[in-house]
Length: 434
Image (tube, rainbow, N blue to C red; front, side, top):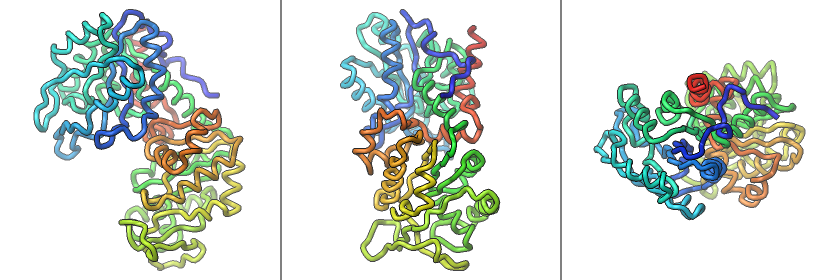
C-alpha cells in the first residue's frame, strides 16, 4: 500500500481541543436544489466526528456548482446552489444543529465578504449552543476565485473565524482561496478523506500489473493530457464515449456525427503511438443512432468496427453494445488485470446506458483486482445502473471510489498527487507554522 509523504501535515496530529476548526469539504452534491447522492458527504463524516470528539468546534464550508460566469465574471447566487440541502442532510444524519450565516448579496457580484454578524454565532459555537456553523457556498463570495485584492481579503476573513484549518476537500483541486490562500494564515492539516484519496491515488500512479484503465469523455481535447499520461502508465487501455469515437475516426478514416475535424487531427497522434505499443483494446460493437434526443425504436442499431471502411460516414455513435464485453480479447484483458481504473460513462445517458452497465458487471467478475472508480458522473452511473452491485461493494476492500474524478485525472497527468495546489499549500504551511 502507498504511504503518505511525511511533509504532509495530518489532522491526527493537530492540536484541536478547545479550538474553532475551519474545515473545507467537497460537499458539491446538490443539483437543482436536491442532493443526488450523499456519498461525498458521508465520506467526510469521519473527519467531522474526529474534530468534535477531540474537543474542536467546527465551521464547515464547501463550493456548490458554478455560480461564476467565466466569460463575464458575474456571480449569480441561485438558491438551487445553496448549502441548505447539505445542512439539512447533516442535521438529520447527526442530530445536531448547524447555523448558516447570511451576508448581503449584490446582484452580479455575489457576497462582498464575511462581516461581523457572524461573531455571535461563533460565540454560540464556542459555548456549545450550536453544533456547528456552515458558511454559504464559497463560490458566492467575490474573493473565492479572484485575482485581486478580494482574494487576499477573503483569506484573512476566513482565517479570522478559526484557530486551525483542515482541508478534506480532495475533489476541489483548483487553487481557490478556501483551499490554498487560507493556509497562509492558519496552521493547516489534511483530513482523513484527503489522506485516503492520496494513498489510493498512489495505487493508480504506481499500480500492480497488469494495469488496465477505462477512460471516456464528451470531448477529446479536454482529456488529451491525462489520457496520454495514462497511456504511458497502463498495460491496456479501453476508450469510450466521444473519445472512442474520435479515435475510431482517426484510425479508420471515417466520419461520425458530432466528432470535429480538429479533434480527429489531435487523435491521430494517439493512433500512431498505438500502432507500435498496441495498448488500446478496441470495443468491437457500437450503437449508432439517428438522433441524440432519445432512444427511438427503429432509429438505432448495433454496428461492427470490423465493417468500417475509409470514407464511410455514420450517424451518432452513442453507446457500446454489451456484446463488446463478451469479446474474448476484451473480457480476458479485464479479467487478468491486477489493477483497474475507471473514469468512464460509456454511453450518452439517460437513453443509452447499456454499455456502462455491461462494463461495471464485467469488471466485477474480476474478484481479485483492485477496482478504482474516478468520482463524479462515473460513480453516479455505477449507482444508477447497478444499484445492487454498488451497495454490495461500497465497503469491499477490492473497490475504491474516488470523490473527485477531475482531481484524479489532474494528479495522473502530473504523476503525483503532491503537485495539486491545495496539497502543496498544506505542505508549505507545515514549514511555515512548524
